[in-house]
Amino acid sequence: MSSLTDSRPSKRPRTSSTSELEDAEHSTTRTRDGEFWYEDGSIILVARDVEFRIYYKGLLAIHSSIFLSCT
Image (cartoon, rainbow, N blue to C red; front, side):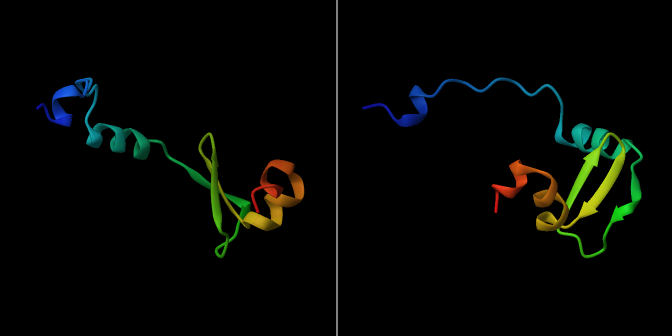
């Protein structure tokens, strides 16, 4: 009788290490938007290299039917 591990396909080899991916994520210098950065915001959006910290229900749901339906 064969085990489940015998019938699994082999995994593909890694193309980069986790530390390389983390370094790439942190190598971009991001700036916080002055108008849309709320200390008590509940979600952070990043567009290119600008961070926006906003209220989920507040700004997103008012201006987007996509986020309104997520409630």
